[in-house]
Length: 431
Image (cartoon, rainbow, N blue to C red; front, side, top):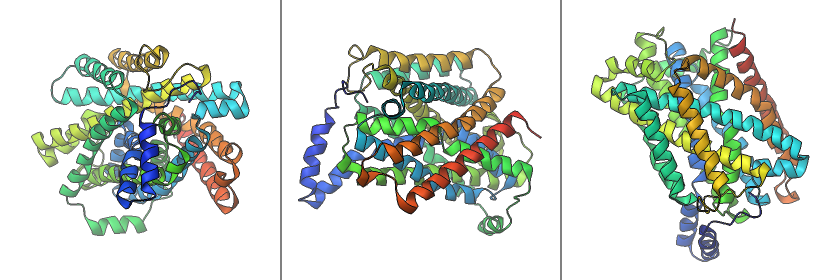
């Protein structure tokens, strides 16, 4: 964040809790509860409408064969996002601002430019998901989309960062409906274990879904959001440990939800109709309804999808407003009133309107979703590359990446980028 951005009022309270935590165990718990939030919010947003569709396709087409990947992605996701927390708390700067300071404004504009494309693309997916849920209950697309825009503007314009964070978490926790439904579907544990032993690594469609799942979990905008969020919340370097736990807990929750969607699809659609097309919200819901029951299937699926799409829309729009402000210098904090930071709130609203108007234009949303996934995948080398270089160069010695861990993180960045580019190329040039 820029130096001219006021710190949120919560900062003083956090500092007081930190002093008390060193003397009383109960204060330590209060400190942890005050600090957690950015990691959980960004991870709940990670399981957005596109991610749900990807996980459902994986379970429907290959049963439980990709469940191992959801487990493997927990530590990878944590390692990537922990770097953003470390950079934000130690440098007190957002991602774009830090790139500008270390590598120059040109590179910062390149990074933020790709971020804006990613954010707009993600918003199209979220609004498409919200519109799809509305259609399940006979709500016209224009009503559900425009109603969502009004709701999201009110959430951000009327609260501090902490209030927005609480609302986002409450909305995002509706995604846990997928977990309950997956358990209710009574998955076959023996088939699950068998799938772990028989992985079709030579199957072209399977490899494409491997890449798709990686791209659905490692999102470019997540890095910008969490780094800016810990700064806007007023967190300091002494909050690094609880914020790491916040991030790890969020990684577990988001992959639990992804795994639950995959298990649900494998235990229902994959067992009865594995060839069912699952490219839209309506197709997934209609495939589940005959198995779960009309009313139960609709309500549970709507809860999960709305939770995923709404929290992602909040996060992605805020990310765009923060990121652009980091290279232009306008005030960019939820601690400011809209009249104090007009450009910050204007960018937030404009992003929502662009996403909403595009969905309402009648564009082919299936093709649009594929385009968004391809774009995000191709951006991974730029975003992860900057993140890794900043962790090596922008941090003071006590927090800098070094030794075997630096090599491990570098390997993860390279492998994730390669898989992301593979997904992108396969999306553009399918066999």
